[in-house]
Amino acid sequence: MPERLDPATDVIAPAGAGGAPAPPVSEPQPPDRPTTGRPRGLWSDAWHQLRRNPVFLVSAALIVFLVLIALWPQILTAADPLRCDLSKSQQGPAPGHPFGYDTQGCDVYTRTVYGARASITVGVCATLGAALLGSLLGGLAGFFGGWWDALLSRIADVFFGIPVVLGGLVFLSVVTSSTVWPVVGFIVLLGWPQVARIARGSVITAKQNDYVQAARALGAGSGRMLLRHVAPNAVAPVIVVATIALGTYIALEATLSFLGVGLRPPTVSWGIDISNAAPQIRNAPHMLLWPAGALSVTVLAFIMLGDAVRDALDPKLR
Image (tube, rainbow, N blue to C red):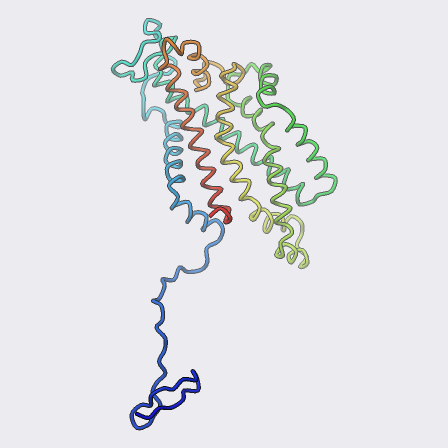
């Protein structure tokens, strides 16, 4: 069969019937890949990663369960956490009372369930307050700079120098309220500088991007650039820090309540129950085991959630 030089490939190709050149032989193509539509953004990509992270799934399931029992503790128990019987003081587990009784004869199981409400309320409210205040002040300082940035930095340094536990002992010892709001206010007061520093650095990085400079060159005002271009691209580190800090704030509330300056009776709190059970740890260890275990699981769940969110929002960690 006659052959000819194929000019497209510079190789000798066999001629077809009647001397006509044979059709070029194409290389095998890989199978078609399924199209995924338009490229995912930061948040959709982060959610895609989170759904495949077992750490996120486990921690999210625990947090949903804790939030449900904090909102509706009647799901798990119909007893009153303030109803006590001194004749059953420090007794161990019994039918209908799987965790036993504390020193006052109160049901440890019921108080452990109801203790989630105060701890999670303090953690969530304090985190929201610190995140909003810190993001506002830190974002404005990072965007405008100048004397406002210098003033905020010096104020934040002052709050960073206050020991948390010592500050709580001084601040909360003069408060007579037994509600959660004094504790929330104190945590926000000492928690916003950390968020402000993260927000400031994130805004400084975001405002140097090309799209922000282009918006400035096109005449966009400061408010529009901050809200439409800088803030959406600088909020991810703040969310990560706030999520991890939520577990820390819950542990801080329990510490202050254990020391007697946080939540006070008749409020039901894990920190209060741990404080009451500590002197009786040898005689009735069940009094300490269950509220301390619930506190540890809750703090661990929020910290695991924060780690998973950090891994999803930071491409360098994938």
